[in-house]
Amino acid sequence: MTGVGVAAPERSLTGVARRMAVSLTAMTTAGTVLQLVVTAFLGHLGGDALYLRSVYVPFGFVSLAISEGVAVAVQVSASTLHRRGDTARIGGVLVLMAVLGVGGFGALALLVLAASGPLEALLAVPEGSRDAVRAFLVALLAANGLTMVPMLAGAVLRGVGRAAAAARLAVVSTALTTGAVLAAQQLWGLGAMSVPVGFAVGSVPLGVLSWVAVRRGGVVLGWPADDTAPALRLLREVALPVAGSFLVLSAASLGYLWLIRDGGVAGVTGFGLGQTVQMFLIVPAIAIGSAVAITVTLHGEAARADASRMLLRLAVPAYAGIAAAVFLLRGPLVDLLTTDPAVREVAVDYLGVIGPSLLALGTTLALLTYLEQAGRAVAALVLNVTFFAAVLALGAALPDPLHARSLVVLLALANVAGCACVLLSARSLLRKRKGVPA
Image 1 (spheres, rainbow, N blue to C red):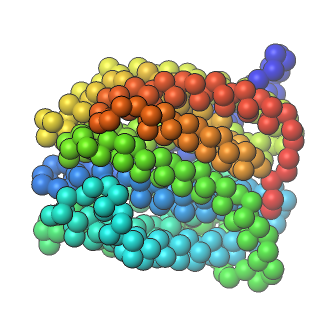
Image 2 (image 1 turned 120 degrees about the horizontal axis):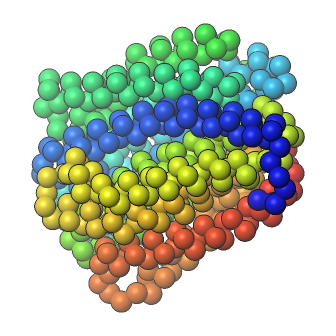
C-alpha cells in the first residue's frame, strides 16, 4: 500500500490474479449455491428445520476450521512443490491430508455427541428440539468428513495453477450433492436429515471424479514414500493458524447466539439466517486473497512486491458492488430462504444494516486470507482474536435483553473499525518478507 507507481508487469500480474480470482470465485460460488439450496430446502420444510440450520452455524465454522485449514495447507504445499518441479510428492501430501481431515471430522462428531447436553443448555435449545438438534449436528459433521476428498482435490488443482479445473470439479460436486439431498427427501422423506444423508451418498461418486481430476492434472496418488515431516510442518505452521481463525469465528458465533438467547426462536433463527447469507457473501474475498497468494507463489518477487495493491484493486470494486446489491435486494433474497414472516423480518433487517459494511468486511477478509496463505497465518489469527474479543466484550456490556438489531448495528460498526485496523497491520506485515514452508 505504498505510493510507488504501478509498472506494466505489475498490472499484468493483477490481471493474472484477477483471472485466478474469477475461477476461484466460480469454484467457491458453486459451494455457496449448495449451501443456499440446503438453507432454502430447510426453510421450506417448515417446523424446526431452519432452526436446526441456525443452531448449526457456529458448528459450521468449526467445520470450516478443519476443512479450510487442511485445504490451505494442501494448496500451499502443492503450489510450492509445483514451483520447485517436485510434483511427485503432491499426491502423497493429498492422501495424508485427506486421511487427517476425515479423521478430524469423525473426532469432532464424537465430541459434539459427548458434549451435546452442555451445548444445548448454553444455546437454550427448547426441550422438544434437543433430540433433533443432536442428531442433525452429529450426522452433518460426520458427513462433512466424507466431502474432504473433493475439497482437497480442488486445493491441489488450485495450487498447481489449474483453477478452472478446480471450478469444474466444484460445479459437478454441487450438482451431485444437491441431487442426492433432494433424492433423499423424495425417496425416504427424511426431512432435515436428508442433508447429511445426501452429503454422504453424494461423496461416493465425487471421490471417484476427484481422483480422475487430479490424475489429469499430473498428480499421482499414493501414501507419502518419504519423510512426512514437511506435510506435518504445514499442518502446524499453516493449517493450525488458519483453523484457529475459523475456530475464533465459531466461538464468536456461539457468543452472538448467547447474547441474543432471550430473543426467542424467531429472533435467533432470523439472526442465524442473516449470518448464513453473510457467510456466502464472503466467498469472493477468500477467493481474491487466495488468488493473490497463488500468484505470488507462482511468480515470485515481482508479484510479492505488488501484493497489497493487487488485493485492494480486486477487493474494493468487487465489494462495493456486493454491498450495494445486498442492501437493495435484501427482501427478495430472504424470501428465497424462508416463508416465516417473523424470521423474514429479522433477517431482512440484518442484511439492511450489515449490507453497507460488507465493503469493509470483504476488504478485511481478502487481506487476512492472503496473510494466512503467505506465511503470516499466526498474525492473521491474532488479528481475528483481537477483533472478535472486542466485539463480544462490547456486546456483553450492552443492557439485557439484547435484541438482534442492537447486535447487528454493533457488528456493522465493528466491520468498519476492524478494516481500518487490519489495513494498518497488513501494511506493516507485508513489508516483512517471510517464506512459506514447503
